[in-house]
Length: 301
Ligand code: A3P
Image 1: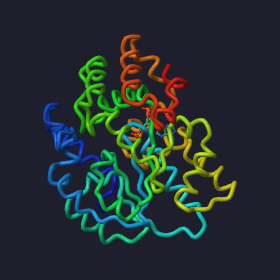
Image 2: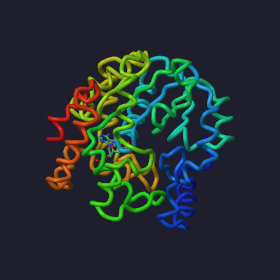
Image 3: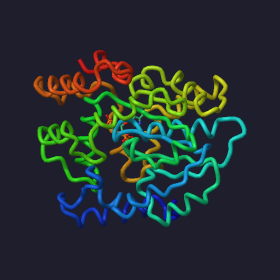
Image 4: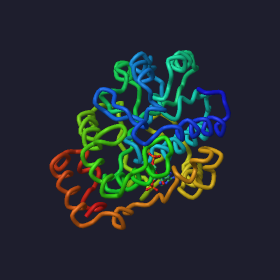
């Protein structure tokens, strides 16, 4: 929604971030931590006024689960789909919008591509009443934690992680920006029967990108030929997106597109930390449908 070139927006944000101490970078709103520069109270308060439309395309994820990958996939699907329409991009995240930007959002032509990390209970209610289709990407909690740790250390708008052990404890207690992974997961678990919600996992998309792309385009009612599916898969591979990332994410390209693998947790977690995460997973998600979809035994044990 900002007409300033991306690299200038980034540079301005980095300059403001450099003026803050680590302690000043996060603040709590309704009990959840958010980066103060990107999601000041004024923006979070105004978020509830957002007016959804049935043809909005909503992408949502807990941080570090592959949101930017999903954005790349969705934009490429839209570009390839027959009868491509103009799409207003309300990216990266809805909760970054100021009240003025929300007004522009309300006036932007359909269909609009919208993103958020907000807990499903904090997504503006109109997205549910208007039956907006929401695509949720999940990732196993061990790799999510590792990715978040590196993100904290390389994103100037977030405080640096004091140490691996400290960040591990903060993640496990939900004291990280956008709150607890497990609270977030349990809230989506309750919505798994909603026909307007589709959950995919990072790991399944990594294993079979073409099938993931077919499923996603079908969910949004967009038709792709098999050649187009293959083109989307090639254009949104980790290597392709990383190569293009200076254009799409300016100086943050290498931060958002770090390693792009499954199982990096094995080179970070101690056996005790691995056990602690296994216990947390069992406590919160074992026996749930989302828990089964995450295929924890295969990817985390
Ligand atoms: P790593 O830090 O493990 O490399 P988000 O976009 O939600 O912030 O998620 C970032 C994670 O998704 C990073 O994980 C990043 O490398 C990974 N990622 C981004 N694009 C990807 C792609 N095309 N394929 C696989 N992983 C990707």
